[in-house]
Length: 363
Image (cartoon, rainbow, N blue to C red):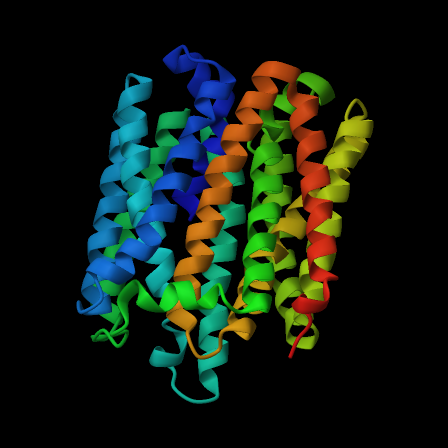
């Protein structure tokens, strides 16, 4: 997940180095998102009978190769090939790893184990952006991808050494996924995933150039602010988990309100550095809540089909990531950076309406 979001803090540098527009650079988020959406159900279909440990190792190796391709790219085409490969790895990995908690710790500890795994997804989601910005500021954007490749190698060694054999248990393949759409609460949850992820990535993919141009925040100050955003995301992960344990609908509502409000505040008061910095930090807190809040909501709607729901979550979430980055790029190239912030803010607030619908209530 960290590798997926590395480009967000590096888009201006990548665009300059490869001689492409900022909107075109946004394809580095669009391509892996859309590919990952297809990889999620395909991982269930084609890896249904393969030991999960072996699948995870293969996906982590693909992740490492994708980062090497990005780090050595001299054209948009080559870096997009690397990002395509990353999309395959991310979509399948998130689907399989996100449902392993109860198998690794059967019984009452299964929920805690799943929370630990989900926290890794959340941390990677929020850590990738500041990590890329800091490394890019200290060295260059290519070094960020080399670092991603090194982390993938460390993960390969860890999984090979520490993870036990995990024979496949899902015998339904992809046949169980369509049935989830017949459940009203699951449908509402998946639509909410679409709106909240679309909102975030349409706007936040371009937060670095927005802060450069509108707020006058760049260089070390920008890196520090994105790092603060990431740290706030860690706090948001904990907050989202705590609220979800009390009332899962409320966690999604709070995350959506904070995210939408942050984007609109940045649009409204972005000229003032203090206000812009506050909005970016609160944004980090809100998006840190999103993965665990949405995943908790969806798993509560399909307790008997966790892996199937996980695949649906990844598929819809990654479609939204790709669509969001693409929509944001089109808006930025046509209406400017402020238009992306406005779109993102309104889309996030629309998620609240979904959570207030009668079919979204817990059964």
